[in-house]
Image 1 (cartoon, rainbow, N blue to C red):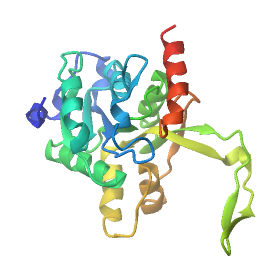
Image 2 (image 1 turned 120 degrees about the vertical axis):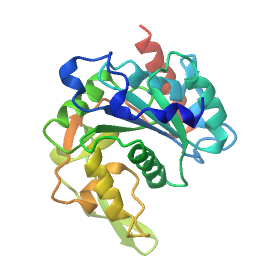
Image 3 (image 1 turned 180 degrees about the vertical axis):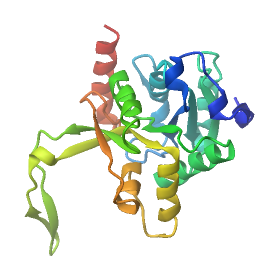
Length: 263
C-alpha cells in the first residue's frame, strides 16, 4: 500500500459501518508505530513481533478496524518497519487504513506528521481523533467507545487506569533520588492510549508547542494539559490488559493475554 490511498478526505469515507447519527464527523484512529524500541531489541522491531500468532501492530490496527464507529485509520511508521506494515495493511481486511506515513524521531514528531497529513486532507475541525500506541495491542472496545463518547462533551480525553500503588514524587539529593511528596492515591492514574481529541484542539496545542524547542512530551495528553491548561481532559476507563509492550520480558504476559482473548 502507498500513500496514494489517502486521496479521499476522512470525512468522505467509510460511512457504511456505523449508525447515521454517529457520522456527523469522522472518527479517525492514528496508530503510532514509528518508535525505534531501543529498550526492546534494536534488531527486532517490537511492532512486528508475533504475539498470539500475529504481529503486535496487527492487533492494534484490528481494534480500530473492527470498531463500527471508527471511519478511518492512519498508520505512522519508521523506515525499518514501513515495508512490513504496508504488506500487513495491504490486505483487503484493512479497508479503513487510508495511508501509511513517515513518522519522526520523537513521539511528538510522529503525531505532528499525522496532524499535518490530516490537515492536508481537509479533515473537519470537529473530527474526533484517537491517537494510539501500536505497542498497546489489547485495547478494549469499551475504551475506544468511551473515548468517542467523551468527545461529545469534552474536547480531549485519555484512557487511564487508577493507580493501585502509592505513587512517590522524587527529587535529587546528591547522587540519590529521595521522596519529596506522596500524592493522594485516589487522584493518581496511569495513562494509557488511545488519547482522544477534537482535531482543532490537538492541532492548536501542537501549534503552540512548536514554539518551544525544549518541550519533549511523552504523550499527547501532556501537550494539551501544558499548552491549553483551561481545556479539561476527561478520563476514560482503561484496563490492566491494555499493556504497553516495552521490554522483551513483557512478551510472555502479552502471549497470556492473547490466549485469554482467543477463549
